[in-house]
Amino acid sequence: MSDDRGLSPSAVRASQQVRAVIGRLRRRIRAAGSTEDLSLTQGSVLARLTDVEGLTTSDLAAWEGMRHQSMAATVGALESRGLVERRRDPADGRRLLIALTAEGRARAEAGRQARGEWLAAELQHKCTEEERRTVIAAMDVLERLVRD
Image 1 (cartoon, one colour):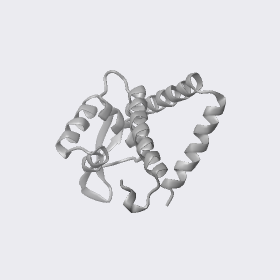
Image 2: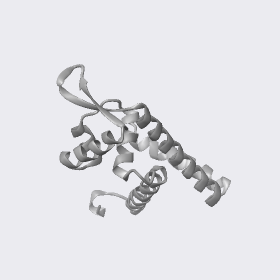
Image 3: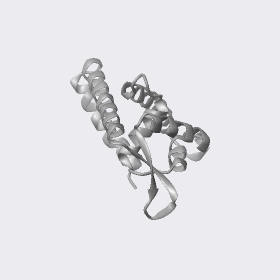
Image 4: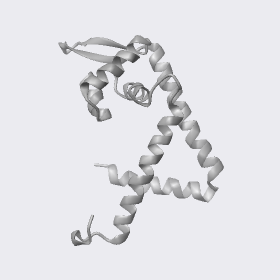
């Protein structure tokens, strides 16, 4: 980012700090919700499938920013543990959709709860009430950036 685009120094600095902090926070939150027997990618796939039921391996690979072959191995590992299953797409019988099993859904929900509890505990122990209010206000500002 350069000044020749008319960006204020504060906008450039805020952009850099938001990206850096959100990246680190995202990694910490993901780690807080993972269990020892699942990789971060496997946990992320379970979490994604709770939000969107029935995705292809290609969809999941694109979401994670990885090669199809690598995601196929991840899905295979989750399937062998009984956490996901492959189903024919009712709209296109040639496509296989990856969906959570009951056990996979339970694991994903437990991970989601653990992540929420970790973040709430960190905010409780490391921030004052005023700082938490500031975080809430900042989230309102950031939310405006992502609204269409």
